[in-house]
Image 1: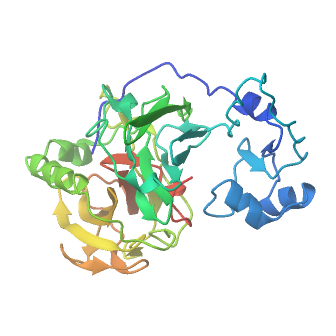
Image 2: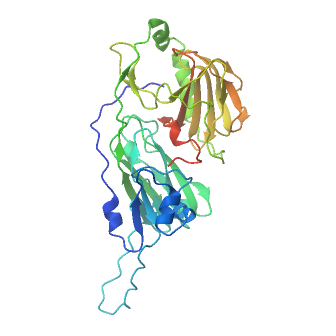
Length: 368
């Protein structure tokens, strides 16, 4: 659950609009404070539906600084008929974050932050035959680095789920292969800008980190992280508790005892009274349920596609391993069991075992 933090010098993402401004037939727009998809569509004489289609959006959420591609603002001037002496026509440019190989168009996020979950979008007649790797994971503190991944989807529209490990500020590099063709891309990564939090927990609580049962607990969770079952969710993810307040943010670097190692917080904490209902964030299968020394009352749900959700510190666990659960189903109650100093739910969203920001999943089917 807890890993030693690696300190790296962050590299700020480079602006990717230069390539966009060179395009003639399509425009690029940078989202500004107060913008909505509706206001952007109205200002540029298009529709929300067209912006959603062109940018492969899965919802109405947009972020300040995000690059959106617009329908052609200036119709391209027809090229004159090719003459025998004309040079060969050059390939048409594609939007920044988009690359192509034979029969496949790959669309990637323009930028990421450490701890993000994200998707590569593959479209085209050969998209279902492609495989994806993330070679930048080699040498990082990450489970199964550079794993060979198969796209999920149908009818020429596929996605591959990616993750940015906490502590990473070097670019994410991806490779898409189909047949004998390969395309490689790079996505800049920024840090979270958080300062170290010193908890200084009393021995009565911090001592649970040394509990003899912790080794078996960690092994059981690692087994859940290794699952690679088919995707089972079809609806957007929902909050696990009906509270909005957070007592500890995702990705927070912290020490648990004075002079202890700096570790990352791999989930988000939601303070709530003991007994508050804990809900499944989406459909899946319970693969772990019970009381453990560090995580306390724990439920782990496998959603398929390498995605698991984890619910810590519950006072009551109401489901059993092997049980199918549905989005919004009550699976337990908030408590303060395990390594906990007060009643709250610690929620994790793990992509192939790596912690990703739960906020990036809420109210959408796929992150970003």
